[in-house]
Image 1 (cartoon, rainbow, N blue to C red):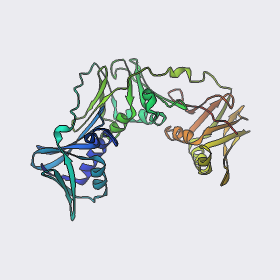
Image 2 (tube, rainbow, N blue to C red):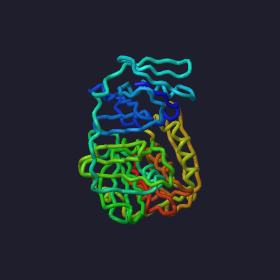
Image 3 (cartoon, one colour):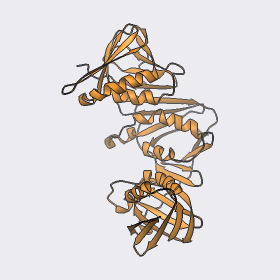
Length: 366
């Protein structure tokens, strides 16, 4: 194998393939990437045993061939190279990576040890503009759990009934929901997509208005845009009845400028990090006092204007959870809906808030 490829093209392909690979695995080959030089391209594939990410970088191929190299090592090297061409050559069991005056010798594994991606015979599909899909994914994925013991919560629930696509994510501390009202974008489906697969999809180089198709069979999904491909197992299990978590009504509310609110919480978090990210919010007429405390370092106090409805309430939240929810909402104004300090609150844009919101559990005030 011998090929020359643009460093930027190689890095873009690495972003897709590396996201699918495993950092730690019982099989060493799963911590590697498969490189195949053929025709006019260098194909990079990553796999963690349940997910495959593949991308082709245009290349000048002198000699066909395939080999596996450690993913993290190759990513670190390419990430630090400057612009220009990168040469990759297999000599025996060593891959030489050359760029300008730099040369690296990487130990290699046989390409035959790398697992092939399974075939997906689609029974359902969803097709919609890439920009709309990514906006919906960005609106919920921050709420996914990282607890492998509850695998279904490490993904995003996709539910399409023929008119509305609903995406849901929760880690039991917060619940994010984003709806897209679109008829005719596919057949009805309910599937739990691993967040890791969504991160690979976010690396695809598509224009916002280009249509992306996600195909499903009973256990897997497939995204194939020609130069890049994603195959992933769907998460198996029953997703929680999330609608029961959403408070049906509220008695208090604050309407706040989103950017101001983010800045206030961000500053309070400097000290809140020492107390489990606890940030206290106290409604006082048409303003909210935001405070945080560190036993060893001191206290922080902020104040932000709001439009209040019966909002003289003291309540505490994990500041990081609020920040992530607010940053995922592309809007000018935010409405916080509450009932009591011990009950969940809802954050939503002041406009079209029924289609994008986050339910957040409160923390103990003391």
